[in-house]
Amino acid sequence: MIKSVGVVGAGTMGNGIAQAFAQAGFAVRLVDVAQPMLDRARSNIEKSLSKLVEKGKVTATDRDKALGRLSTTTSLDLLGDADYVVEAIVEDAETKRTLFTSLDALTRPEVILASNTSSISITTLGAATTRPERVLGMHFMNPVPLMILVELIRGQATSAESMQVANDLCAKLGKTAVEAADYPGFIANRVLMPMLNEAFYAVMEGVGTRDAIDTVMKLGMNHPMGPLALADFIGLDVCLAILNVLHEGFGDPKYRPCPLLRRMVAAGQLGRKSGCGFYRY
Image 1: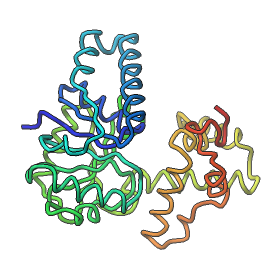
Image 2 (image 1 turned 180 degrees about the vertical axis):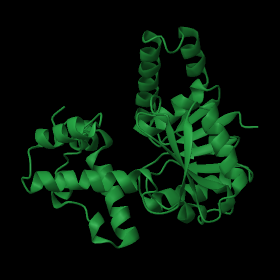
Image 3 (image 1 turned 60 degrees about the vertical axis):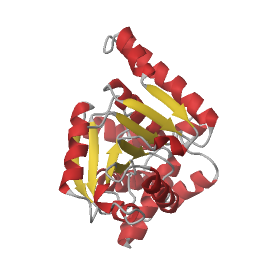
Image 4 (image 1 turned 30 degrees about the vertical axis):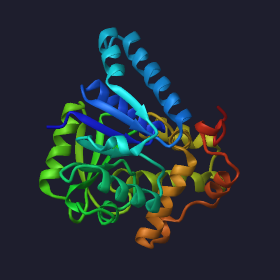
């Protein structure tokens, strides 16, 4: 029976995941190496829940209960009693593998270790533990409290039982789970990132202006956001990291990140989070 959930990483995705579990009635322990990140995460969760109260989607009592279920810490050791753990740290395979080895040593042997990775091999992460059958991908969409989809990724050794537990958890969170195989980028980013990359090339080659490209995709393809605005929202550094995983994983030149994207990331133009990307914020 899963009652307490550990979430590692207090960035945008981590705090959204922590909020979703706390709202669904789970005791949540949010862990990050930096105390300021934890403080910011709690503040963001409070703001997010208050917005839901204003819109009438959550009662003030439910908001207070959810916040009461959330605790934060800089100590990974405090996840020793967690019934389920979701990792949401930086999108880097080696950093994630190191964390999974630590979580494997800390948590009870029957605990499932899930990764919110958007593109990195679950099989590789599972191999860093003694419980690969209990390692899976649980890729939430941003913003987590509002987006209904969760991509569940089955690694080479992930058991059917573990996938069922994750599937049931998604239902308790009010999310729709879709299973994907463990190929680079899974389903969401394998389809999305080449489209965004093509939009970057279209800007670079002068096929159309930023506004023209986004308008064509919004009005012509009925997308709620244009690809360049969406890339800014995701983070251009995140887009680059995922495209690199696709390019290296498949060895196919069609996934080669656009030179303009590389240049913008090198210049620190990362989109919304840096205040400047294809648009200014």
